[in-house]
Length: 322
Image (cartoon, rainbow, N blue to C red):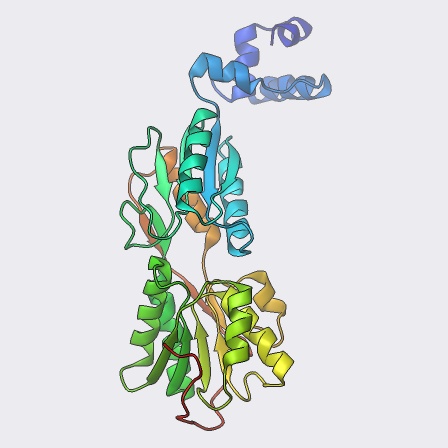
């Protein structure tokens, strides 16, 4: 800053204010200072700023499983929202392990993260964090900051299938201990109604689990397969295609999350879209002090060609039902 001040014939304070966007500096002079700094190859010293302010300008983000395509989408939205406020994001993967989640929290705090955003491993509670903390999970999670309306999304899917005439539905519900999956399944049941025959199967919420369930499915045992996650639904679609079972002619399939792969699957997947950008804005706004309360974010039904009215209804038993 001293070098720039000498070059431009201004004070160091003026340079500092122009680069930080603070103080009374005319827009023209501030732009001149920024351009001169860029041409000279100068970048802000975050280490020096941390020594001066006690803040590192970083936010730690912990996700439960980066191999799940849902969480990189979340991470991108968080990073965009953070960058607009001048923050960098440190990303950590808890590998779906409670112990690893605790270690990643400790590591990010040791690296000086000013705040944490955590998508918690199912069934864990995060307490006594000495920096602002935002939890992204479900309304049933203690201390939750922001969540999609998972139950409302399940209701939308259930109502859609009911309106199409489905009265025999297989629900692939994901992990039995997941509060998010629990809310989605509860919504599905509500939307479908009490007179619909339901078979619920729990498993991991993964492509592999979807493949396995798709290979177990017996044609005619249900007219629709409602999946609590797109990852499950995409695995099911792949397995059914391998077996020559047509979607939606033989069975309808739905998901939840609106991953990009559902848009290019065959057939494209009927699902529920989460507003990742709004969730990210609320999470970042909460930890930076812009907002002081959590929120429930609406979801949107996305109807594509993986669902249709059933050709006929059968009451045959389903292999592997629980």
